[in-house]
Length: 177
Image (cartoon, rainbow, N blue to C red; front, side):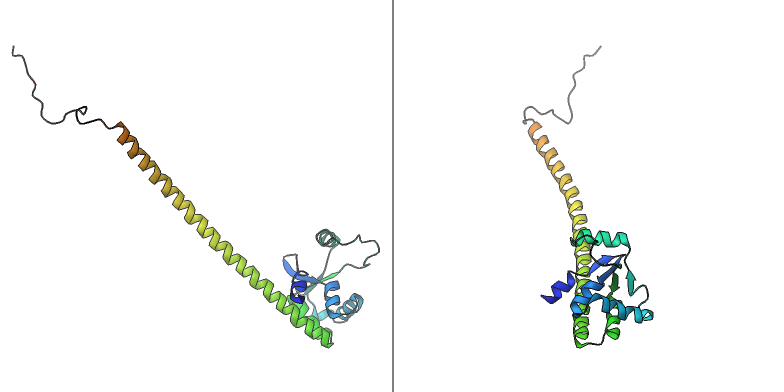
């Protein structure tokens, strides 16, 4: 159940799979302000590809998809988004046993999400190959049915033996002048 909960909180932000600071704080069972404080005190450990602050537009977009309340009465600061490497780096900043356990669970969720994505890509490639093969078969079947239709049409139009035009040598009678 916990793995599913974590996977549901991995978002695609700026082309990265990332988790928000509030979700991570809930997992670590600490307040978000303490998590942010620990990160700010160790900001050198979090380059832009590990952690970034959301823009107002990104936050508004997430609010729509998350169905959260309006910003009024909410956080005063924009949330941090942590990529997989940033979540791993949090374990060096947060030193509780709970943080270590949660980091392991989160890493497993990221790995599972990556595996599902790769499975999805492989499945999509197989479907595209099948579509191409079926399209080729459709063209061949259409040509086959057209040929069969022509044969049947010829059969319907075929004359009986007596009605056929004779071929071969014909004796022509000439009147001699």
